[in-house]
Length: 416
Ligand SMILES: Cc1cc2nc3c(=O)[nH]c(=O)nc-3n(C[C@H](O)[C@H](O)[C@H](O)COP(=O)(O)OP(=O)(O)OC[C@H]3O[C@@H](n4cnc5c(N)ncnc54)[C@H](O)[C@@H]3O)c2cc1C
Image (tube, rainbow, N blue to C red):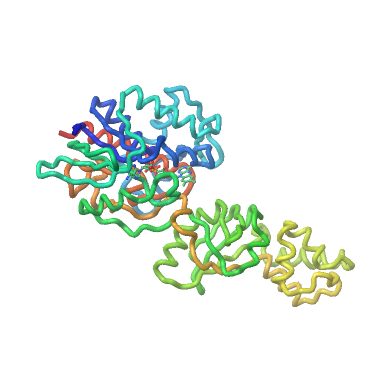
């Protein structure tokens, strides 16, 4: 049986960074990964382009996280966006900043990021075992950790870093094993739920709109008279309901609302957010008068994307061939209302497996934010998505994984 200074379970961005930092501090590290390669999720991140971080300053950066974001302040103070960019650039990776401060590798390839991480791991001669799911963890009377690998025996270390990620996209290896290990070691796991997730709708006609993307629309999720959240951006119809950047961005508040209240949620789409009701009404009157012989369906072509027209006509209940000069005041009011408040009924979020991030995880109250060490088990550290922190998209989640990984590796590498 081999002993190591530090065992790290999970070779995602958090685990790799922890291994690199502990290795730089001359610790003998064993990095254990259940897959046959490193960083599977990192490779698919940002649609294969890997949005590694965001150039936003610290307070603004933290405001993009759920309520536990403050927990990350010490980790960010130690290793933040500039440090991460320098760390990658030192090994020759060229970076670029896009809209919204999002940072990507210049060649738009996530494997270029992985290549840099690998080269740091090689430089430190990190020992990596692949194809090795950890099946059990025990703590001896002397505080030493025994880590059992499927078919590969038991490995021991004085320090253990859990970096097994969350529950989403399980094909990448993130199947939530770490939550069971943490629970077994006495930690509380905050309710696991999907973050950055699409929604299913009651209306089956969304299937006819599959693939249609609406840009610059205002959407609002509400329940009864209560507005849950609203913003302007781009959304997408899918075969089951709605997705796209704006829907994912606002999804966390809606998931929490559905979990806490079980009350039904309405999604309202304002197709013309730049125009007030009055302005839009004046435009409709003008169009109907000037194009009196045009049929209703064809009039809509100037107001809506082609793919939406048939569904819009059906929902409005107005005969598609009715001429503009025959449309009544009530017809016009109905069209106006649908353009400003095209509504769908949200039934549920898609399962956590389809979420971009996992919300919930090891409670931040039981981890020292200055070291990432467990407050319950000496020598146990956490980093990455296993912790109850999550953010909107924009490079924040990966930065959190890298920063907590760096801090966990440094603390485990330095502590007595
Ligand atoms: C489709 C998609 C796109 C994304 N795009 C972005 C983006 O562009 N920018 C951004 O900031 N964030 C993005 N994210 C989120 C980001 O990828 C994750 O937050 C991040 O990968 C978490 O890193 P981690 O190291 O904590 O966990 P993971 O990357 O999940 O790594 C955990 C590792 O642990 C291993 N493991 C698990 N259990 C065991 C076990 N029992 N034994 C051994 N090994 C085990 C897994 O195989 C895995 O390799 C995206 C996520 C998804 C799903």
